[in-house]
Image 1 (cartoon, chains in turn green, brown):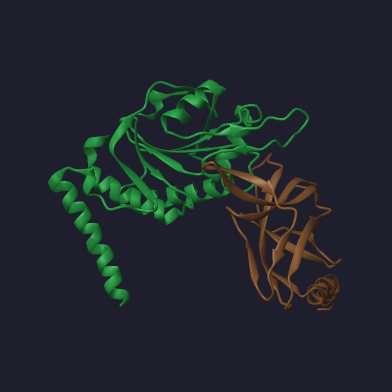
Image 2 (cartoon, rainbow over the protein chains, first blue to last red):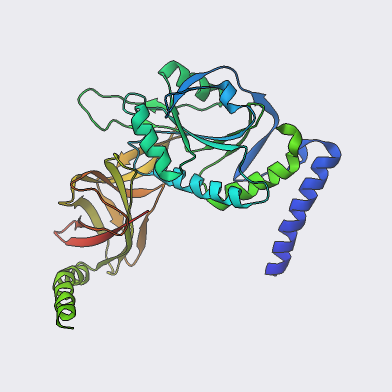
Length: 210
Length: 143
């Protein structure tokens, strides 16, 4: 019984790849609870952030690489460290897989620039994975990129309150090497779920996307 | 050999009250852990599995620890599609049921640790239940 299920899943994957190649149509992709692939990846437009090394982080930094983006803030006790630990494991899996991680980057976008300084971001993201990037910008720029990805966030800055609440999406966004919003991973996330789908996606896309 | 016995005796002395309190409360805790944080981060989260061993409801009303400035019971919630946190002033443990404190759900929000906690360290947090039951629990810091 178990074998049948596993086989069906494997065949499903093969069938998925085959239809994709024949028709060149993403509409044939099976629905997936973990990753949503967009039929027409949406090109992102200009934005301007600063990364944890104090360098400009703009649209050009997304080109030539597959980028995993996650919005959060360092004063977040539960979701952010959990997600970054998961992404670090997913990154490890991708490094070890056949697709490799030469053209892959992980970016933590702080929606709380008020508290998350460049130095704080550097300490924070590199703790999880030395290759991770931490970026932030002013509210207009954060709103700009969040809007392009169709998400919202809310920072409830309260005078006199040190630990004001922040509401943010827990999804992880995948931007392709042409800086197009390509796919989204919905929470609850798991490292294997992300790395396996990314591997399939890379095999489907082939090298032409880079 | 003698020092080993002393260490063991010391451990038993330390652990006995914890075990006794657990039994008395009729609530047991397993897999209690705190996530290690990056340097400079003063906000931590604690997780565990709470088990109510009695045939009546038990209500968790507070948590405290001398290891942190503030301890609060929180829950990660979804509000208009966004994740946020809310204070959970009381949590009911159903009779003979267990309740999971896990990433993305219920957690102990631990603010401003008195000392830097590293993976492998232990920190005691006391859980308070309605009716005056208190349960000191040792949480292991994990990466």
